[in-house]
Image 1 (spheres, rainbow, N blue to C red):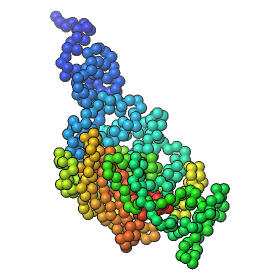
Image 2 (tube, helix red, strand yellow; image 1 turned 135 degrees about the horizontal axis):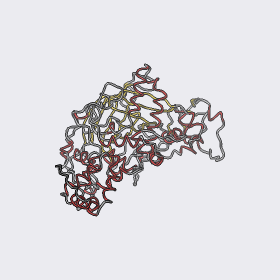
Image 3 (tube, one colour; image 1 turned 30 degrees about the vertical axis):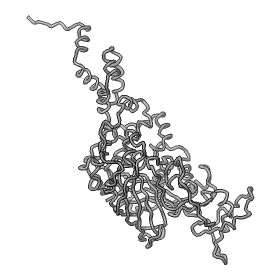
Image 4 (cartoon, rainbow, N blue to C red; image 1 turned 90 degrees about the horizontal axis):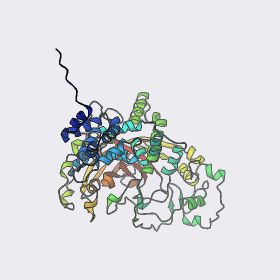
Length: 547
């Protein structure tokens, strides 16, 4: 005789389920969030079944359940701050809010930026490939971060709402490359990047947002306007006050021709001086060299300018790669690598070749007196030493002047027709010394870990050399400068290069590390004249370590 066991009534089964230990119920809730795509819906469905589960999910006394839910889908944001030497509980984390922000149907810009900044460092034992033109991660050697998988999935969505958010976020465009481009995007980028009036002392002469309090500008008593081979005395502009003056086609488009006067002054007949006075608005030049505010955590990158610079550099490289890489195989390989520079892996800390060979003290920097002078004992926390490839773009100076005088908008014919030159120069850098960290502000404890770190790291002094120029591929230039931390834990690179075979400064670059310190993406910014004359040229540049 076969005996059949009667199943428990539905009410009994429900009672039995809810009588399980809290730990088991929480594990069931956690497992219901997998796979990642169905997580939010599963949590919502469970919370609607009964008061007990809803209470476990939304009314717990601590955040341990939401922490486990978050870490099942994303990287632990505490790994990076722990690497900086801070205790994991230094900055309490709202795990529930962070999870909902990322797992919504249309993740916010803040969600993608925070996922980028929270990515853990690439471990020291995982190496970066160095055989190509760009040091891309080896997929078989590098542990892919969970944030990276999620960001790739979001960036691949064909979602109108997300596309609109991406277009409206210069920071995302700078970090992950130009996507979903609108009409005239390149022209607008060119108008911004080659605007000679952009550079000011309160921007620290670089791609930064203006500081709230401007640095004092030291007037230059010289009345002359230096225009690189074109020298106009202020007296030559006297009396040219006709507001109705319009440049003729001859004045606007003929090649620059110059004649020497008896007093040595060079006058340019093809560009009317009034145009320079009306449009460039010279004014007194500012102080030469770099600007370093007292509290560098207040320096914030200008992501609008940086996004425009990346757009121009990438588009120029795609169009002119055959000039830089004459061999067809090298050209194809470089363009393929350029396309790969659009994910989180190349923005993670420690991705640059040899970074962990020198940056070995991150875990030991906290716990000392902030203003202790012993912190001047240096170490290469930025992974400076090595060989780099540096992309530089510029306009012919005559075209640059016309671009500034006539190219006030994206529809301007000058913005469309002005051609740029692009070159890739090798550069070698080494550490030449260290300076103490900046003195900390009074409200240091109120700053985030990424801002506090600014006042714990030594300033790295660097020097080296760059090979090549627009005139001579073999020309050697001395390079020197500093690497230091600014707001948000971002690395600022300030490099000056001398005239060929000389120690006289000619150009200066102000750049920002893309992603975390030691990222494979390197640093991007602008170059201009080292003396910061009012009519100095300006252009974008990008450098990454290859060896």
